Length: 420
Ligand SMILES: *Cc1c(COP(=O)(O)O)cnc(C)c1O
Ligand SMILES: [Zn+2]
Image (cartoon, rainbow, N blue to C red):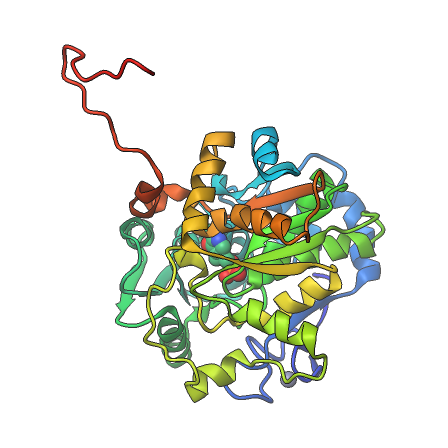
């Protein structure tokens, strides 16, 4: 028995028994009615003691707090390092630490979601899992599916970085390169999965992936209970919402005194969550911008590919904007936007200062600290945890723009600079 009490609709508040609905609230069109997993907190509190007794090996240390009923699929997600980052902190004018999610088994924080989703899929007897992805969720789902002995189908925008298209295929997945954006891939995956009976991990519409991402919040609550800020990039908004839920859960269970403020960072080319957060902050009666309605009604063209070099947050129609904005509000947090040039600078800064090679989407969080410092949101000396969400090794083409050229030297040493 898990401690799940109900699935609650983010839009209308209706509550469903966990067995009665698989993805979204049936009262709304498309995927407008995103569901949130609600727990019996009394039971959760009792189980927490067991989960927290020993050291954190991986995310399954928290199994009693997760919506999975035994027999989890193990590949090593979670239990990542929190690194002191004094050089980065000096550069940014804060007391910085880096939560290094680049060491997850397939290279990103998506492994936390996939571990939970694939474990559930196997328990429920599904043979095939599927998702649409900007790359990392694809690799992650494919890796976990391989581990669980399930087939995997992936829908990606055709223009994604080479390594991100290779990785899921190496894990044995079938990869479908959709001639369009991530939003197009998402819709197609939804339709085809429904027709063919595949279990769909699509961001937000599958309510359980966020629950896996909640373990990042658990780890931060244990590793950095004194943090003033946790800074994360936002694409669909699932990662930040999940981390915040985990932090809140620890606060609710009496295991964390004072949850940190969340700072969500977006890239200039894809600002939908930022826009919604600002609109809601300025006018509390504002109609929320509805991702599903935008998707269906075509207010935003779906043909606008490649708006930012940070491909993992290049999401023009975010599916968890509501949960992400709520997390920002509840935590008394904020949102900022950064340019691609700032992202590339930050990518190199993180590498040079701390030896962490993160992808552009992750570097956006570092750039966001700088912006928030300039705006006075984050103050000098505050304790800031930057989440490095994914490895940069899958996209060396973009990182190449941030680094110096190789210096050509002949075998006799001719060409060796004097000043190094
Ligand atoms: C998916 C992803 C993000 C953004 O997470 P969302 O849940 O879409 O907001 C950020 N960084 C990396 C490396 C990712 O893979
Ligand atoms: Zn509903």
